[in-house]
Image (cartoon, rainbow, N blue to C red; front, side, top):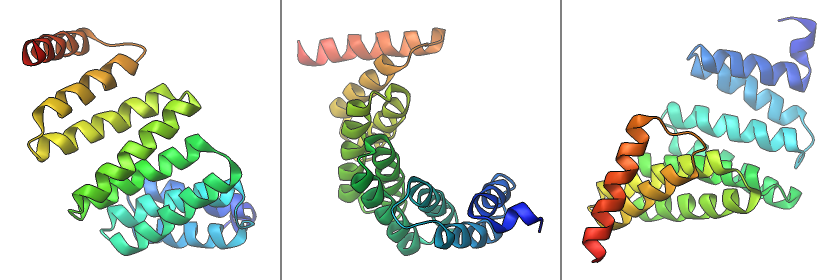
Length: 179
């Protein structure tokens, strides 16, 4: 381990590098060390806990993922970072969806979308709305799923031909459904 990897930033960078290499156990170890080294409630601490929560989710450690992501979301809220809180809540929604706690997943996705909208983060809000729409598809809520998909697509700055076509089809279906 190099000298710079013993700093919190170095530990986090090493953890993210290991994450990209899909070495999740080693990534979690580095990210835990980084989180412990950062000042609690700092932006770096919150971001590291968010990263750690994602690693835990990929390791299928739901309880550890929930704890890390709840701490990250609460920390971001205390800092007044709505976008960071929204990202952490979206990741928390992914965890709950993965462990089949569907109502809690929907709550987190909805809160994340609202926070990201207030922060003006249209790209991330679009991704959260897409995840929420897929959540509704899995639950057989077709109308709300289509509405959320259309909202997701409308937030994207650039749509390819396929995106424009899907959006047009969704609008047509929604118009027929409500008309």
